[in-house]
Structures are given as C-alpha cells and as structure tokens.
Image 1 (spheres, helix red, strand yellow):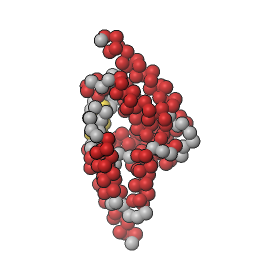
Image 2 (cartoon, one colour; image 1 turned 90 degrees about the vertical axis):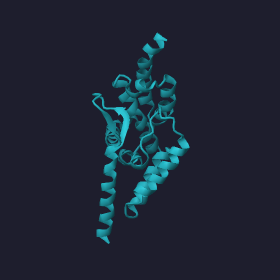
Image 3 (cartoon, helix red, strand yellow; image 1 turned 30 degrees about the vertical axis):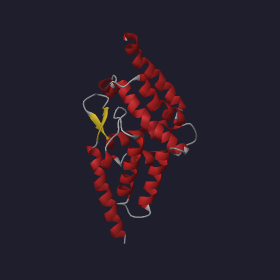
Image 4 (cartoon, one colour; image 1 turned 120 degrees about the horizontal axis):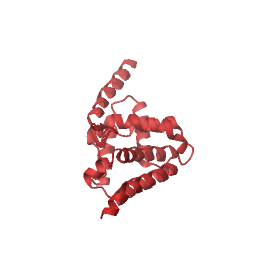
Length: 197
C-alpha cells in the first residue's frame, strides 16, 4: 500500500515539473527573460515568508506558503492568464477547476483532497490566509512591472485604470500597507505618461 502511495506522489511530482515550462508575461527583474510559473510560485512563497507581518489580520504563514506553492499548478493544463489577455473570468475559473481535479487527483488520498481544498480556499479568498495569499499573488507581478520599467504593462499598453482595478482591491483587502506602497509606485510610474498626453 505504501509503495502505491509513493508511486502516485512521484507521478504528481514528475507532472508538476511541467510548471517550469509555463512562461508568464512578467519579466525577471534583470529583464533577461520572462519568468516561468514555477519560479513565480517559489518567489511568492518567499514573499509570504518575508512579508507575513503585513497581512490584514493574523495569518498562518505556513498555510499561506502551501497555498502559494499550489495555486498555479493548474497552469500546467490551462496556461497563464495575464492582465491584458482579455479572457473570461468564468471560463478561466472552469478550466482551472478541471485542471485542479486532474492534477491533485494524481495524489493518494487524503493528500490529494487536502491539496485541492487548499487550492479552493485560495481561489475563494475568504479566509485571512487566502486573502493574504491572493494579495501577494497580485503584489509580486506589480512589483516586477514597476521595477522592470513597466515590463509587460508598457509592452501591452496597460492603463492606470487597468492596474488599479486588477491589483488594487485584492492587495488592499489582504495587505493594506502593501497597497499603500503600490499606489505610490503606480502613481509615479504612470505620471510621466499622463503628463505627455
């Protein structure tokens, strides 16, 4: 029985290696290339480890880290959905839910159900842990775009209004102080463009 569980776990771990091949729109800070989703997930786990004191309420940093390591695994099946992609939120949610069932279903029980439950908690963003995890998932690409000179925002003509509506409510809800910093960055980033129009 133990051997069967191990084989399922190893199968899952081999499958999620594919996350390294899912290229996101955000560049690395040195602008040498785009980051992949596995790098993004690892980086977010580090953000949770370092920044948990800025959550809107008490959080369990270990649970937040687990959510962030799991949250984008579904991109193995469905890819990344960037701010300027124009995809339907409902269609995206349906595709990701199906991917979560398949991928976490590779694991033995109850582990697969535990991971699926954590992933669903992240998606719903109702608990303090999930609200903070969601906030970090928006904060990291915003930071990258700011410190990469506009990154994909500039490439894709993303507007100030798009940035405020995509990032603002989620970051503010889960980490208000981080949003205060973001507002300053975003205002400074878009100010020269506003002045030139």
